[in-house]
Image 1 (cartoon, rainbow, N blue to C red):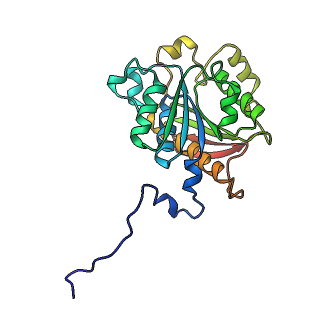
Image 2 (image 1 turned 135 degrees about the vertical axis):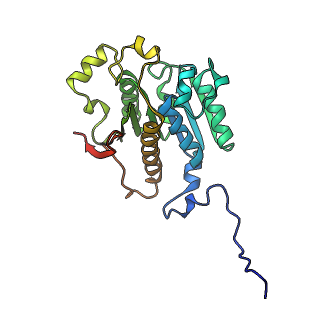
Image 3 (image 1 turned 180 degrees about the vertical axis):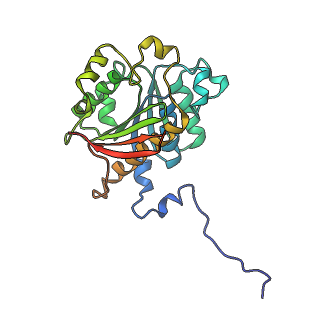
Length: 256
């Protein structure tokens, strides 16, 4: 009798633990095409999660360059990346995380430089943005192309992840108040900062809240994709997950 029992385990591939989830379809994720708008703190976490999960193709849209202040909140950036375009740097890092992934960087403004064709091409859109104007642009294009989209927003230790599924239910504009429209006309961010203040790096964000909201957003994206084969999977359709990092309270709100 041998001194110790030798157990024969089959070798695991990269996604073996994910496949243990009863409804999981890795081939479906591999075939998925996702547009991510915004490659800041929240966008970094969203992209990292998508790469780890094995999403096949990601389009990254951002017009900004890496700054040193990004390094405390953005896992995909390094000191040597200062001055480089965020979308291009992030695309390279994603393919280091998962070489099977196809990451397509688009250096541009989501308001003006991304046409309807890309919105029709992708399966869904995830926003990691800091202003209402860009969200309005995405919302309108998603509604015209019937493309589901997930909106993530963070401010200091608070955040929200919302899911909109055209043509049913409420859209992003349905969540806006009269005060929101006034601030939109003043071109102020979600944190009530002016463009000059945002360019000065004063937008308050943390990597911890980014991780929470990005995790919820990507988890909703995974469920939305799987609904092609399992339509009874619950998603936050027309709803938002609201998180308060000061007290760790969270709740789901339903939009009218």
